[in-house]
Image (cartoon, rainbow, N blue to C red; front, side, top):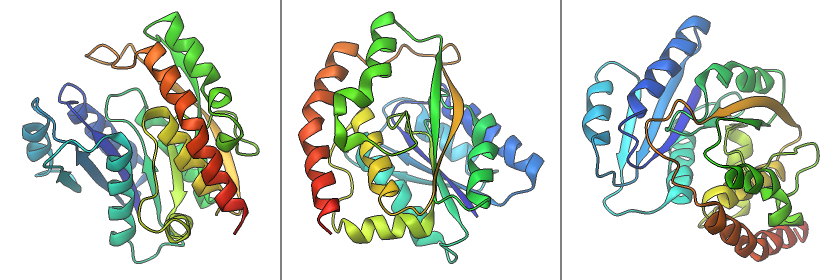
Length: 248
C-alpha cells in the first residue's frame, strides 16, 4: 500500500486537481494507494472540495480544529499512515504538497526506488517558474543555511519535502524520537524529517523532480527574507537533533 500524505491549508484552488492526478497515476500502474489529507483549519473551500472527493477516492481527511502548522500536519499524516499499515516493511508513505508544486507524475519514480530496496527516497528539485530571484537563491542555499544538522550523505536537496519512506523506517524514527518528531517549520521541517528518517534508513536514494510554480492558482506564501531567517534560526535545533542521534 502507498499512503500519499498531503498537508493542506487553504489549497482549495488546487487540492482537487492534485488528488485526481494522483488517482490517474496509480490507476495506470494498478498500485493500491490511500490519500491522507490533513486539513490544517482551512478557511477557503478546501473542506467542501475534500468532502466531494472523499465520495469517489480512497481518501481520509483529518481536520485540525486549530491551526497547528505545516510540520504538525506532516507528522499527523505520517502517523496516520503508520497506524493504517499492517505491513510496514512493504508499505510506504509519500509526502508531497497540495499546491501542485510537487507533480504527481514523479510518484512512480519515488515508489520504484522503494520497491527496489531503498528505505528513503528524496526528490531533488529543479525549480521552474519560481516567484522571484530571491526565492530561487534562498531555496538553493537553504541546506547550507541549515548547516551540518541538515546534511544527508548522497542527498543534495534535503528541504524539498517531496519524499517516500518505507513505513518500518518511519516507525524506527518515531521510536527514536518519542513524543514529537518535528520541532521546526517550513523548509527546515522538511530537512529535519529527511535527516531523522535517513538516520534509520539502510539505503537512501535521491531522484530528480521538477518543482513548478506556474501551475498554482495563488501567489507564493514564502517571503525569501523571512524564510532565510527561519532557516538560520533552525540551525541550532537541527544541530542538537543530530548530536542526540549520534549519541545513541
